[in-house]
Structures are given as structure tokens and as C-alpha cells.
Length: 288
Image 1 (cartoon, rainbow, N blue to C red):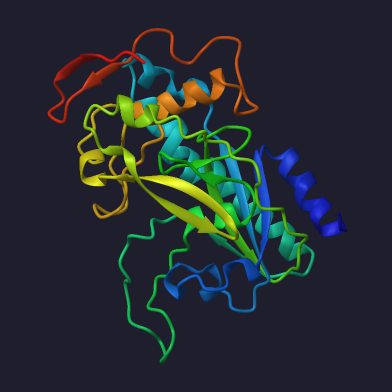
Image 2: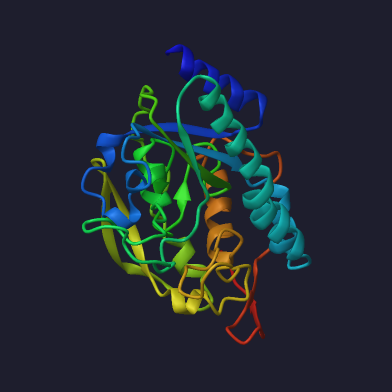
């Protein structure tokens, strides 16, 4: 490990960064310009992906159906907008203090349409919003699960990410070889709106890693009253489904099967899960 990598890892440990990975520019070859971080910084050499965990307790109120607002803050908006943004900014300063340019990037949804016109022929229209799913896999920190969410070996889906593009050449993090999601299909089984297909799926390949991802009807997810949150940036964007019934079921399964590292003395799910239909009416308890 080089001295700069050590400084970044030491910073991460001291500042509560739970996930960190480095992806070289070559891993983004062929990615469309409108999703490619190097459209923003063509002289860059490395993408850094950094993440903070979603504390499992922030999901307790959703799991019990008793409190949704605190997850929305501690697990979603505050975590992205404040806690993670501050450490992303401060890590950018570490790179600058060592003589390297660094571009901090917020995880805006790729579905946001361009908000300008190209400044020159052959340039993508602003604003370019990098594909964080692609980048997280390329940086070796995550895979895309059957449920369509990013899973890390330590937390499963319980984290948020920011990105830094830098002209520093950093030792790449190996792309994950092991599979975290075992494709059990329980996310599809328990979805009250039947938005997730258990049999219809696509294979997504990034940097040689192939992942089986279910075809999901996100228009149904947008109506979900079971912990999903509408996309706060654009109605065209995917809803946030980390706290939704489908993914809470994933989290319970990952913990019980020992597929992730961060586990607990007591299970997440302590009774049969509740469910509401698209109109917000009680749909009964759904057995696992």
C-alpha cells in the first residue's frame, strides 16, 4: 500500500467511513459519457467510492410499522446530505493537501435528464450524473443483488455512497469475486405489489462480474406503502427501497444465513411482517 492510500484508509477509519474502494479509469472504458465520471474530469485516473452504514436500528420503526420519519432522516436524507457529504468533502481535502485534484460527487439519480446543452461537439450535455451502481461494483465494494440494490459484504444493502474522482493513481481494489446475494427470491415472494419478478431477470456484467438482477416494475414500487420512499430528486427516478418490505426481507435473510459480516444478537424480524396494498390499506401479515 502506498503512502497516499494509507492516508486515505487512516482517514476513513478515523472518520467513520465504513466502505472504501478505488477503481482505475480503465474499468470505466465503454461506459456511456452521460453516466461516466471521467466525463466530468477527463484527466482523472481513479474513482473513489466511500460509504457510511445505515444503522440497523434506524430501520426498527419501519420494520414494526411504528415510525417512518426517523429512518427518512438518519437512514436516508441526513445520511446522504450531511453525515456522508462532510466526510466526502474532508477526504477531498486530504487529496488536495497532498497535491492531487479531487472532484466530490453526490449520488444524484442517473434518471435526471440533462439540464443544459453540450458546450462543444462530442461533449455530453450537463449535468452528467455518474452511475453509482456501476462505480460501486467497479471499485470492488459491492454487487448488484437480485433485488436490484447494491450489497456489500459487510452490510448487505445498509449503506449510502458518495464518490470522488481524482488524478491520483491509487492501487485498485479487486472486484468482488464472492456473491453476497444467493438469489433466494424472498424479496419477490413477499412484495405485496408483485413488483419483482422471480423468474424474469437480466444478467448485468460489470468489469467481468456477472450478476443476476430481477426485472422490477418501478411504477409499482412508486406506490409502495411498505417502507419505500419516492425519489426525492425526480419522479422519473427509482424509489428508495432500502426500508421497503422486499429489502427488509433481504436483510433478515442475509443475517440469518451468515451472508454478511455485520450481524446482531437479535434478529431484525421478530414477528410476521405487516403489509399494505397500493392504496395504503392493511393487506394482512405475510408469512416468510
